[in-house]
Length: 524
Image (cartoon, rainbow, N blue to C red; front, side, top):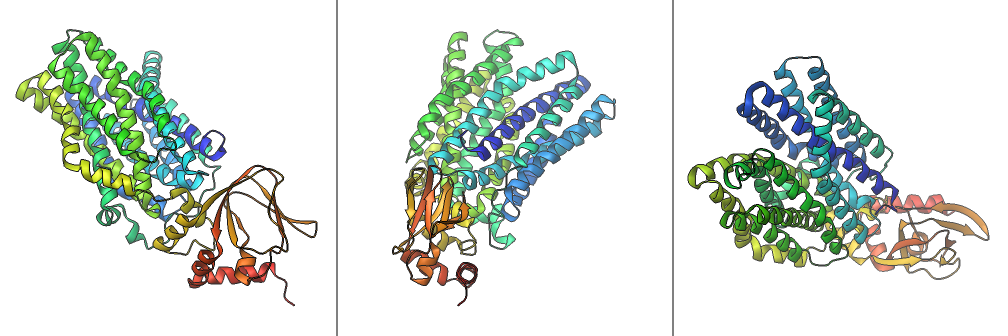
């Protein structure tokens, strides 16, 4: 993944984003607790989650209607501005209510990042394996952040204050925005009307996406319950004292980091439902066992396993969601997931106290451990069906959409073309097409640089997201130029019949084809 410069910048910015998200959440809860105890901290946490939950489906659709790379960069800038304003309020000793409102604004701006990034990645990846690898790296970053960000926050709080945390994270988020600002990306992801690409409309017409969003959002009920459950287990069950809650949280985070090694096996894997189910079973099963047999050593080991299982569940589920969702509505789908995640976190934070009131701490652990098995009983068969049919070629679709010849095509037509693409590797120095030979393939470049020449004269250089070979197919003439690989290149080839029928059968595409012919074939 790190060989792709654009993906590298996105993931480095995502690391900054995750650090800021965790750190300012902790800092704001510390600030609220100092002013009103646990009740105020709980209300502030709830107050940050609810607006974010409500706004997520609409903020995420920005990437469907505008260039997603710009939306991603703009989201980071807005987050940085909100965090900076919160920092200024806290450091100046301003009103607590203003600080809470500004922090909630920052939490709402956070909802732009994950959906937009999920929609942008297929347009930047050069192969399906590279896309899966990038999703794995995103999972690694989120897992490491569960350990590194709280530790950094503790250090900043020790030498400064919550305002210091917000100021540092504002700068870090702004740096992330600067990283992704250099990315061009596609002009827009959707070519339909805005109303057709809203997140709720997408889920209404896409049962597979709706199912996967529900499965992934359900895990956040468990995650939202953990902060409270760790405290109750440490103090009320395991007799570890207040510091024990930190140790249990660290064990879960360490498991998430260890889980990154398991997720490597997802790269190139055709079926993702089995690892998703395995991750869910380990994640939830750990809490079932803790509730039945709570010991200090056993709980720590089980929480490490739970963290690893959660990482596997999340990475496999998000990759499957990318495969199963319409490429022109990825941002909207992940926006609904973001809203569902926020809602799950809020529900989880309220669920544990209710379960404790009904049956005690051990019953609470068993109760939250039963959530994912219950979901599996309801949707397991449908999830397997989605996995077997989730073959949407998201990388190939993104490449075709980057070409003016194909961008105007509707979703069914361009998806059919993407399924016709065949991967082709060209070594540096090799000739892909020769002038004067018959032409039967159109090529689109996924990576590498190629040189176009005629009669020994260099005409132009082609790179990622550009195509060649169309003139021989459109005019039914021999190849009009040589195309030679200047570097190792990865291409996708489309047959003549599929190319000609798709281009000439759509008015806008036919017009673009006519323009290309006029531009490259001199008038006689």
